Amino acid sequence: MIMRDAVVEGSGNLDLLGGGLPYWLLSADRSIGLRTSDPRYLDYVHRYFSKLLPLIHPLLYANGGPVIAVQVENEYGSYAACDYVYTAYLRDIMRHYLGDDVIFYTTDGDNDKYLKCGKLDGAYTTVDFGTGSDVGEAFAVQRRHQERGPLVNSEYYTGWLDHWAEPHSVVSTSVFVSQLDKMLNMNASVNMQVY
Picture 1 (tube, rainbow, N blue to C red):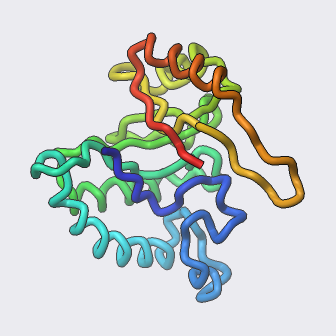
Picture 2 (picture 1 turned 45 degrees about the vertical axis):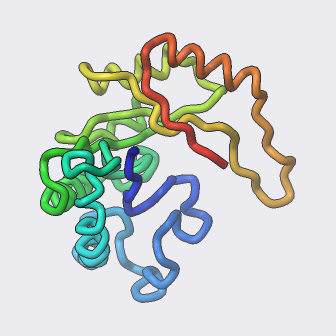
């Protein structure tokens, strides 16, 4: 099992309820720098992680639980801040509470520009993509930023989100299966994003 306890789950969700951030966060102070090393924001992150991560610790594989990897940040390369102090802080606080016997990883889109700010020393770099991407090129992007280790699509899109007043998004089952077969034939690891 991989644990996606990153502060923000999905850059695309930022328009909807802060992408997982509590609604009151901006109402407390509209000038707070979300997903940055702004000390006000990091104080909230620290308070959240100091409660959450001790609950995760006994669930780690090293402790007999199912969790083999923990996500540090999600699609941070799509976010404008590109604050390495912030992402290093997340990694370090996770390491403080969870130790070194877990794989920390990041997830970003299959484009070099996303991985520029999304990757992080001390965390395994993964990519996410759906049926519209070229599997070989997507993993080539990952390999340029993560030279060794498994190919990982940590968020293979089984569908796509719908927006109000737009047509329902549908993904072809045959294309989905074909792309999945390509990944598995490359001996890649795949985590399916369910909608």
